[in-house]
Length: 166
Image (cartoon, rainbow, N blue to C red; front, side):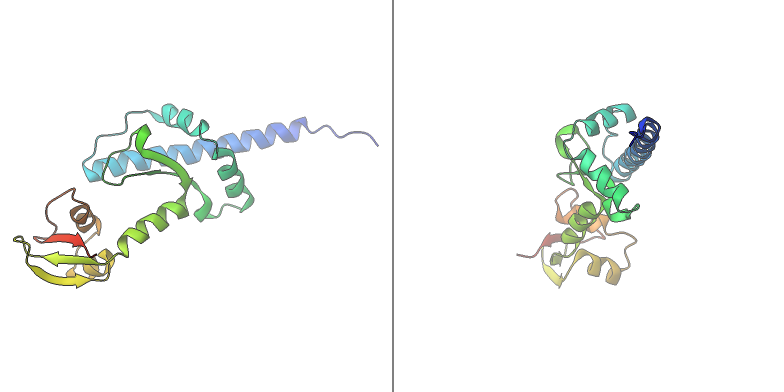
């Protein structure tokens, strides 16, 4: 039986993977820049190629890309770059490669911790089951101001002091 020439297939496969990597990394880079502006953080110190170089150095990149491809494009498995410490800006020392689902789970875990609402003077007002609950009940447009207040990034949110319940 003659051995089949797979070079054309391999070239097409590699080209498709390169395209997916460029698309994913471009989306990550754009999101990092937008997120930094919204949070008042400095724009990441790298350009798009710098981010791609960093990603290529991560040992789990190939597995993440393969898992995403094998899933048929499951959004939960899209490779993603997250900050290790949310209150700090994007720096190479403060980012990690994972999946979109891992990032979402991390954010949801933070939102599902009980928090305490206080006056500016620190007097107890109410305990909420989560940042999400307080955000919705008080009519805030986003959870980010309460999140930044409980994390110590800003002093108040909505005119109140906030802290995580013990």
